[in-house]
Image (cartoon, rainbow, N blue to C red):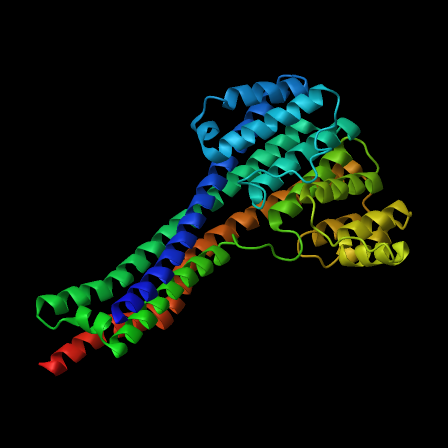
Length: 396
């Protein structure tokens, strides 16, 4: 009976931990395949636009160019190619890109960055059709963002590989200790599976080791920015909004209209489920006021539309991402071209900061791994590896 309890106490947590880690590894692989596929498509799309191709035909040629690549044959790439082909067919029938995709998400990319990137692509394309913004230049900027995302995924994979190697070595230490004890005739395995105290030590030690493995995985991905979504925009999201703002200004749109276009494209690219469901009994005016208070970007767009002028930028004056642009616009600059150049420079600065943050996160991984090492792996080694040896020596 004790042996059965010991086997179950070891098999259940080990199986659960292996399933979680392997599932995360698969998600990383699918996310990388989708991102590579989308990056190649955007690059081909931009090159077709540079030679004067009609956008829908350029998109079709770009999908055809990616059809034979290894990325297109990967699980995430196959799904992405199907979504791109379906949207291009809709556009050929007269639809605006991005409209009607509200609740759609692929099996692999629905909750990850890949589907958000796809929504952003179609939203930018649709905005270009409506407002005449330079689609080729925006696609170039999106390709830069996707390249940066691939670099970030590479940093994440490298850091996770190092953390997993450390985990493997630490997990092998108790096994090595048990093997040494068995070779010396101390029978630590019999103690761990046939004694009540031994079974308790084995179960608690395995639980500590599995907790340490899951904790290391979670800490590593969190440090690298891969778990959950922080409140507010990220640097790449802010840079994308500023790209749209700059290109709208360069296309000749008024300042208020250009910011409204960028803000509306950001909201459309965010996809469904980004806010709470409306309450039919609620006051629409109160809901609007609450939404504007919670979203400084939307509040600036509303104030600019009402003719507030330079004072409209006050909600973003101290914002970490948009503050310099708000102060630039608030200072009295009304020259669209000059403001557009300043906005582009700020977007590039945000991208550089995002790249630096990715490198810093990768370097911090070795520091955060010390917590599960100290609190989980070493106690597990003591419980499963050292105490049975001490008991064996005491029995002699």
